[in-house]
Length: 415
Figure (cartoon, rainbow, N blue to C red):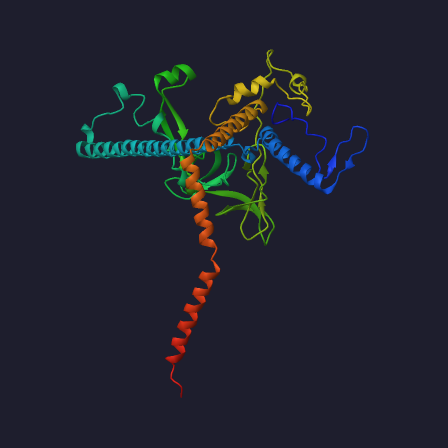
């Protein structure tokens, strides 16, 4: 795909030093050395005039010799730097706002959990103090939701970017064991994993009752109270995988404390590293990833056929642009301050403006008064006189040097 829609101007035929085009002969005729020097200077100046135009067509605007074009280039570079600086500030402000939101969410969940623990302790103390006269708390409005957790507080808060795991060696479908908490020692299958919040949900492990709001009950036809696995921190679980015993050779479950990523490859399309393979550090044992179950796909009447998707409808060609030339100006804004590529007509217009400015400056220099010319002539004469010394001045300098040397020799005492 060409970078610019404007055609490149044809260079003159006589483009080598010492060579000119002869109308009678088919081959170029070499000229004399003096004529070759003059022609070489003319060709070099022609090439200098052609260079900014060709460079602008290829996007290399830094080779322009026109002062106006140089100012435009500097303006575009300055605008780009300012835009990048503003974008960087916006990104930092957004990240700071996201960090504040994460802290507020973590604080809200922490306060909610502390309130639940405090209420449960007070209720336990009241029940112990009253004995048989203890009130029933699972009646009235809390008949169906007593002892359950709100659905908005069942998950953990989102972690900060610095605290998120860089690489997850545990994915959905792995068998893991809980090594911390009330469910310590239980083994289960990972059903869900959230990298942003840093937790996993294990099937039939760490179960709890969840309170479903009314609007969710109506949409999903769910009950007001349901049991779901609660979240467990990613650091509180370890992978369990059957490895052969060194003595018997029979596979048995082994808790793998640490894994490392090997054989990762760069994805040119997504611009990220793939997950690679899992390996036990210090060994050549590779732990395969669990098989992912492909989701069931249902065909519909309005689906696009595969033959239509794979049909090649556009074939790019290098001889002509793939779109109308006016579309490029509409996309990149012809008069934008970020523009770095300019048309041939625009470059020639700027060069004509610079030529008129240089001509005007030359006329201004030629319009001088007699007093100004006299001052310039005297300045030149003074500069020439200061540089050249007369014979009389040189002789006088020699006499002074000889006298000083004689005085110095008389002052030296002989032994």
